[in-house]
Image 1 (cartoon, one colour):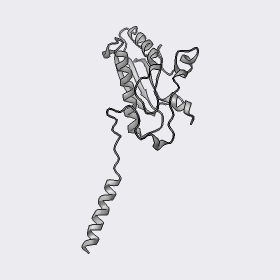
Image 2 (tube, helix red, strand yellow):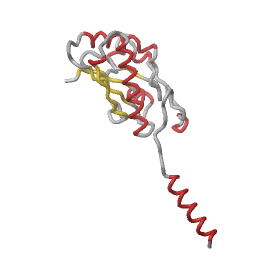
Image 3 (cartoon, helix red, strand yellow):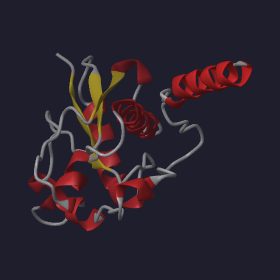
Image 4 (cartoon, one colour):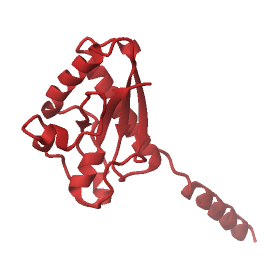
Length: 173
């Protein structure tokens, strides 16, 4: 009888602890550490979103003269290919007068809601910091994360996923 009681208590504890789920700890990380759980990873082709003829306007979901900043899978570091867009966005922000700049972090559909929300915030903060380094007053900027809830593309393709890994900028109205 005592063994049966101990077994029942152990089974109950196992069932209760097996159901808990915590958001991944991304502190100090720049990439998804468990990306293989989603299969093969994809990475962004920065040349598609650079300043060559036509590409700048081909994929841009920002408004008010700003250009969207794109990121690799699970990444929140700004790549060298996006530096010209950061410089351009800093110029637009400096010429915006007293208007606030809204910096919106976005993700593809991979990962939990909590993970994507946190990743979107890290992307928005990285863009805010990069623009601030160009002399834009941080009091003029506000960041927000949409996680995966604001896609610009809904097709199940690598190019579509790349377009959703972005930060959009616009003037707050």
